[in-house]
Image 1 (cartoon, rainbow, N blue to C red):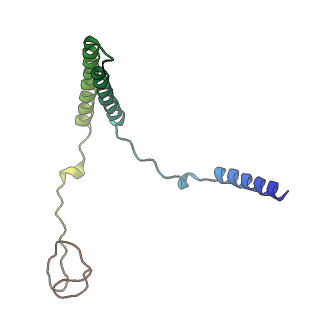
Image 2 (cartoon, rainbow, N blue to C red; image 1 turned 30 degrees about the vertical axis):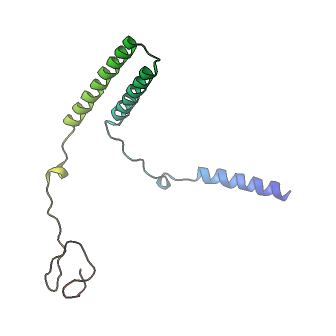
Length: 130
């Protein structure tokens, strides 16, 4: 009887937990690039070309079938690559890429010494760095 009651309690808690999850508790989905589907298709075509070449070398395909199928896959690949280039060229340029930022050089506020990396204490005078 105790086992049955604990099993029912566990099921009720599991169902309640499932229904009480808030949207804010679920992590955000990473944004997908606009060319993601084309990149997947390009990878599939390359894989198909590798498989086709393997089957030809093993002797499963005749020379004519191999050449015809290879040409069809290459034409499809050229179309996918052209579409990717078109989408990338028509995408708005990011402003952040045009701005060249000056590298921040850590400088000691006490003695003015400059260092290649940020440090907690100055290597010259020993005072704390800000």
